[in-house]
Amino acid sequence: MVGRRHLLEAQLAFAAISRLLIAGALVLVTPAASAEDWDRLFSPTLGDLRADLAEVKASGRKGMVIMYHFEECPYCQRMKTGVLAQREVHDWYLREFVAVAIDTRGSQAITGLDGKVLPERDFARAQGLRGTPTFDFIAPDGTPVYRHVGALYDTVSFVGLGRYVASGAYRSQTFKAFLNAQPQ
Image (cartoon, one colour):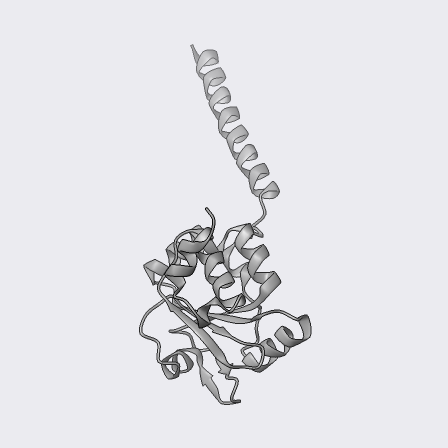
C-alpha cells in the first residue's frame, strides 16, 4: 500500500510539474506586449505637440489626431481593447496621421502648439473637453479641423472617422452622412 501511495504522489507531482513547465513555456513564447496593444497606435511622445506636428509635416501625413482619455473611463477601455488594438486601425492611422494620447487626469507636461506647457489634465481642461474619449484632428499647419466626442466601437467606424477627416469631407457633410454613404 505504501508503494502505491508513493507512486500516486509521484504521478501527481509529475503532473503538477508538467503543468508548470507548459505554463512557463507559454509565457516564454508569448510576447509580454503584443504589437496589437492599443498604445502602439500612439506616438511615444515626450509631450511636445510641436515636435509631433513637425513629424506630420516631415512624413507627409494628413495631420495629427489627439485622443483624450483616462484609465478608468469605461468607454475608453472598450475602445482601447476592441478597436484601437486592431492591426487594421494601426496600419491605416499610422500611414495617415501621427497619433498622440493625452490622459485627462495625467501629470506629464504637454507643450501645446502655442508653446505653453501644462500638465496633461490642465491641458485637456484648457481644450474645453466635455467627455472621453475625445479625438481632435489637427491639420499639418496646426489648425484644429475636427473634434469627435465619444467612443466608436468598431474598426470600420473608427477608420471611417479618419477617412472623413483625411478626405476633407468634414467640410461639407456630417460624419454620420459620410459613413452612411460608404460602400458596405
